[in-house]
Image (tube, rainbow, N blue to C red):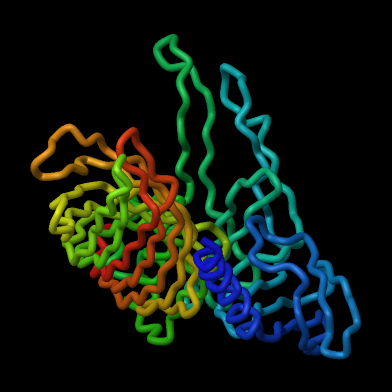
Length: 386
């Protein structure tokens, strides 16, 4: 068992070791125009930072507020923030039965806005302390970004209190109407993915060939189908202490769900897999067969991550739901309950992935058999459905 925990520890160490090697220097541009190189103490913000802590290459620790910087760039990535003084809608939905016009709160504030799309028309983003998202549109040559507004309010309609939505941002986006391909914005929603798609399409339409999506939405969920081959070994003992060996090569088929952890640049995922295994034991004295579904849960970490290609390691824990496990000539043998840890290495290109997975099985028992040792190697080819 110790060797299996060593395997998991080795995988987790490789996460840390390779991640530490990939750390690059960050860049600040002060309000005076001076540039500083060093390391940001905190990164991967869920909400836009109100201030940043910075360590220079000389080891000096500094703190900066938005008014002190023009902006900053995170490492060698495309993630960047700019300082802007903007009008921010801080209105909250009230419980009034009438229009909430009196509760509208708009304040000028100086903040770090993250850049989502760069081009003739730019898209900037801010999440406040209440986790409310603010999107800003800035056309080339305009100094001040304009917030795209959507408000909800309770109104009386036919004597009933209903929640109405005012999509002012659709009118605001009409300034992009000089593109023939974008003459109707009614289908645009006030979300990152929808706005990014709209702004990229506009910039390409007006001939801004260097349009660049600086930061895209994470895909929250990925659904994969998987097909492969497993090589397994399992040794069991019956009540007479007779060994029953399952050495086999067998098919594996299944489906997996990956959930991307926000604000990790798509590097961290939590994955749930369900794989069906079916194999025959090769013990001559006790010919046996087993069929089970392997349910696993664990994290994935990308060692390499770009738009088309990923190299990842994974580790976690699984349970094995036995569908059948019996001697072919003795149907009264009951199913065995199994569980154990796993580790793996995978490569993704576009929508296709290849994964090598090692599974260690333990804690197996029933009233007739007990498993002494069991492990399985699976080579899986995966295809992303969603």
